[in-house]
Image (cartoon, rainbow, N blue to C red; front, side, top):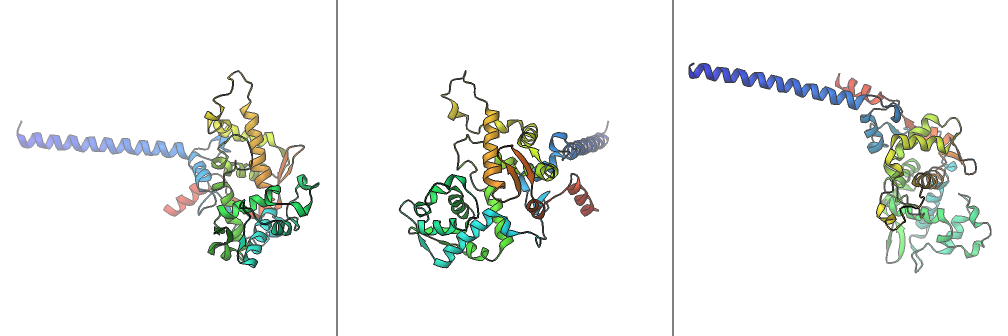
Length: 316
């Protein structure tokens, strides 16, 4: 066999191998696409690709869960935590800057003023004198200040609190302020800050709970109903992030992490978050949840396969 013929044979074989490789690559891509776009029952028939969007890109452009563009019907006066934040900022704006106490707290004079607005009811304060109140006596006011720091609306310099440039700009931008404090609450704030429960990974999966409320919340349903769906979708949700804190506990001790997780979820996500924004109605005694009118006016949740259709149309 001549060298020329041998060389041609090698070229032909290489072309055949490249063809087979490209064919295999295309098959793998199609298999991956089919896997990532298939509906998954435990994800409410959203696909793995859509779940990635929900968990990692909610409230961003082209996201399945987002704020509505038209907020003309949104009643800001009915969102307690928003009003607490805005009034807190307005006090600081009025004063220019406010000297904090030695402990770093907001002065009692202004705590009394903010508390008198009754934005949020706090039954634990019924027997306390208003004159003696300080920031740490009123959890939602302390939380108001914390979220303002987390959202970079305020800053401290030489022991005095004042508005940042962003904080000043947000004073007359109600919808932008609401979006900022809402996303800051679950994306930047440590949800475990105000309780003694173990640390569970609620922030990562929180948007899926919003999706569940959107889908099922028209009818009053139990906390157990929603929690079981969360655990079904994310079986490791009830595993504490830091297991080392339980290293010294007797292994024979009867510790029900599932119940602990459910109680933490109830406090952190429902009572100390969604209720403060009035996006759900929640009865603490019966453990019944129902979405509010605010929820419908604030959020837009796309059905499954919507993004796939939109992307297909863009390609075409």
